[in-house]
Amino acid sequence: MEEKKWLTDEMWNVLKEKPVVFAFEQGEKYLSVICAVSEKLTEKCFTLLGIIVGICPFLIASIYTFKNQYFIIVASTFSIVCIVLCFMLLKLIQPRIGYSIGRSPKEILNKELVEYWNSNEETVFEKYELENLQHKIEKTLEANDQRAKTYKIILYTLLISFSILIILSSLVLIFLFLEVEVQGELPHFFFP
Image 1 (cartoon, one colour):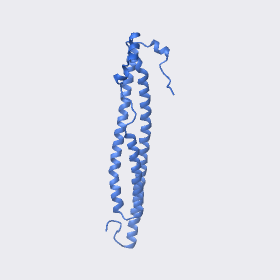
Image 2 (tube, one colour):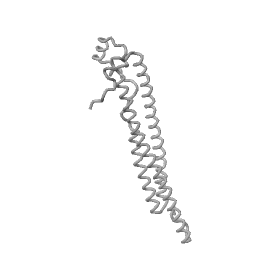
Image 3 (cartoon, rainbow, N blue to C red):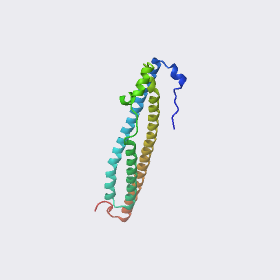
Image 4 (cartoon, rainbow, N blue to C red):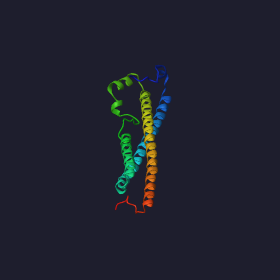
């Protein structure tokens, strides 16, 4: 499926050097901002991944420390959620199809294109890159939007599941202390 060109033939014929160069420079600036947003999102993913990886050893240690089956179930479930979220974060972090500012000279300087430029005595080369630049901007915006949505889902899932872990763990501990108080024994849910 071929994408619809936004530069019509009519517009192409009336484009002069200054507006083309201006539009191209603005497009490159905009693309650099969009690429910076993408990098910032990747940095946030690494930070969140570090937090989750830091929490998991604590959860595993607490599973072995507490001898209560309810707490083990709660902590194990949260550990599984954390592992799934780690895989989702790794998918967001992994190298992805992206666009950079500019193109390789090898792509731009091919024989047919140079001959065309020479035969038409073309001096405004940016004119030919405007469509490509717009395509890069649109695809990068689309990728950033999708990645941001996935990151938001991961963040909310982590927040909600961590809140549930805290609430259920607190309830388990309260019931354990109440049980110990009624029986008049020392707590037996820690290592003996």
